[in-house]
Image 1: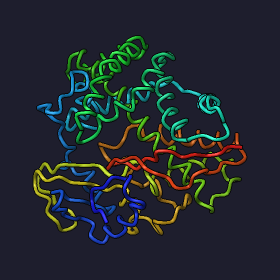
Image 2 (image 1 turned 120 degrees about the vertical axis):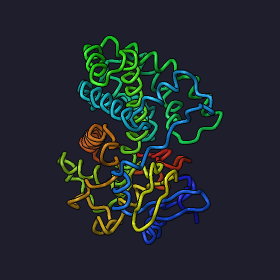
Image 3 (image 1 turned 180 degrees about the vertical axis):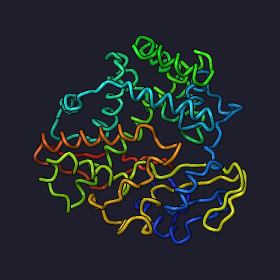
Image 4 (image 1 turned 60 degrees about the vertical axis):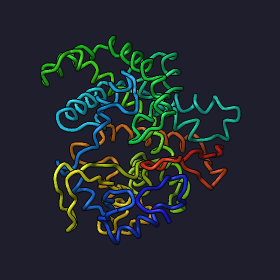
Amino acid sequence: MPTTLFLHSEIENPYKLYETMLQNPVYWDSVHNLWAVYSYQSCKALLLNSSAHIPATDDRNTAGLNEYALLIAGNLARLSNGIRHEMAKHSALLLLNNMKAIATEDLIEKLIETKNNKHELDWVESICKKLPLTVVLRSFDFNREDCDFILSKTEQLVKIMLPITTPEQVAAINEISKAIYVTAEKILCVTNFYKPLVDMLSKKYNITPDETASLLVSNTIGLFIQSYDAGRGILSNSLLQVINNSSIHREHFTSKDYVEKNVIETLRFDPPVHNTRRIAGDDIFINNKQIKKGQSIFIVLAAANRDPAQFNDPNIYNPERPNNAEHLTFGIGGHKCPANHLSVKLATETLCYLFERYKTIQLIEKNISYEPIINARLPRQIFISLS
């Protein structure tokens, strides 16, 4: 049985492993030379610890990313520490605040209508990979041609978030990074909020307008990546859990609040993101263990979300559990995902529409396979029937 590091395509039920590892919640993995942390309190303490740093990017660029890929990666809030993180996160929050409201119902139905047989579809390919990113693009007034281009290329770009990239992945990132950066910059430059944000951020952080512009463009692209990756996962897993749990009664889905509770419980029970990484900037003491300066830390958020010390009956899917929102899927503290509310809102609206529009929603294939990645559990396909 695998421990610590594994591809989600190769393990049927990682939660059984997490349940075992919670008995030894701060574990030194001598094979991979890292600390693996599983319990809720230990994970939370590390996420809040200022000495637990996000692993530095490849400063010497040994991978061979091109100028635009380096610019994007260097400016993303999810990949930076210290003042750079503060500036990037502030940029991302300001961008989120300037997104226009988009009616998701029409977008969902159009995506369904494009299928030859709209009553049977792959939920992942037809909706989850397209809807969240389309909402973000439309909210910034990207035209149809630019939307289609970015939608077709984002699967290549998301590889920029991987801790280790292969030469093939680097080549794919380099191939499209300039075009996506230039396209995002072109659209942002003509918005009515762009120049005021550049002026405000430049003054606040004492950086040049060009540096500020690159922060805004890069973190707009960061929203593309997050909506494609995490947005896809939340939509996929939420629908799976709603269908799979017999305790869920369809009549409850007339309530938007109840649908939102299911989305939040899915983020605890079956989150798309399972782990994140840190580097000890100084010696850190957690659960009577000493993590030495420079050592790698593997924080297993999905295990923390199933910790019985924090959640009653954690292996039971229960939307009414009062503290489900305490899950760590989006992180906590300064590095908490800035798009968490947007992701929950979009998933809630999508499920509400789906259950209002269709009387019966069923899985055609119950055996779900997952993408071959370490940090996230993303279904490859979910075939459903609608009637």
